[in-house]
Image (cartoon, rainbow, N blue to C red):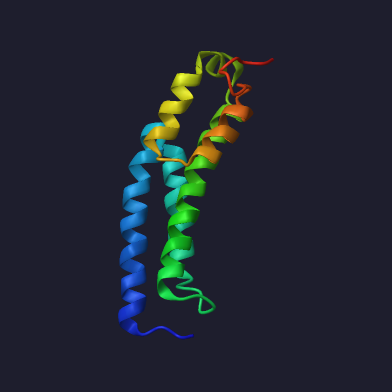
Length: 126
């Protein structure tokens, strides 16, 4: 399936809007460095254009999903790779707030909490 110029413009506009919406979320929840990394990566992805094996709406949904994966990955990386003194300041509530800011789904939140060492009840494990 090839796309018309109008469809490609629609895809590019959607990609720009998605990036503009996700960037401040990652910046607020994690850091400006993580947000800039997401933006650069998503702009490269946008430059490739829509995948001709999918329809336009599927491409837009896939682009949005990839942007949300960046949110998930940025929060998880911050938890896993930050120094111990920073990690010691993280509470379940502060992690949930980061996830809320990025509007992550329940499964992503559960995985992030697990990576931080919290069980379902909120207790932290060493």
